[in-house]
Length: 259
Image (cartoon, rainbow, N blue to C red; front, side):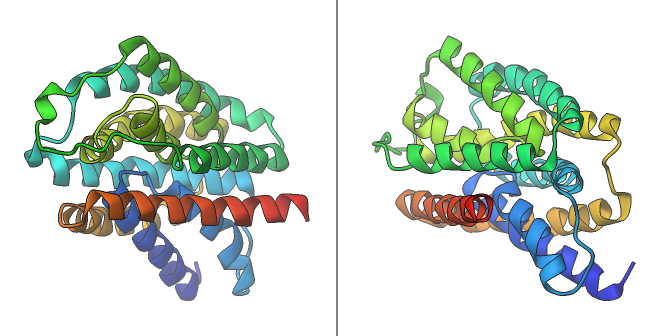
């Protein structure tokens, strides 16, 4: 593998994983378009949407694992929320990840674009404001959490994204979870989801080993750094970072699809 490509892949993985740790996403909303567009723009061979989604699925597994460990001592991870949404999302993500082998690249890109657009719209809805540290008393609708997680799992498994960039807005807007609990719990849920989507991608035969290893190495370094930064940032700022990331990706993906 070209040394320049190795550096580029590590940089993409590092940036995406640091943001992953900051805002509780797996990082695919950043890494998916970066992997799809940056290598060919710099003269390297282009990866197909199937290959990009497979690399993303594996990288998300390790990025969320590293980020989750960075949050474990803060008491922000809600175990009940992780259990209900985690079980549903891993089933859905396996189905989506395995089923994606029967879809064309265009269908995968459109699925990703619709998912990102939905997340962007949700982020502009009113969210729970209190973030007073009483995280043990967080309540939510368990049936809604299960159903929504199952749906997220299927569509996110298709694109290898683990669904965190839609899971966080759903937690904030529909389930009314406090921001820091949503971010920390989302990393745990996304880790569980990535088990299903990664297994599905591997069984589908689209995994590229060397790029995946490079991205994983970047994740293990960058995700804990992002988590540490997140604990020092105001929750409103975290929400706006997520909004900017999602909206930027929505504009880019839809522009490419339409044009």
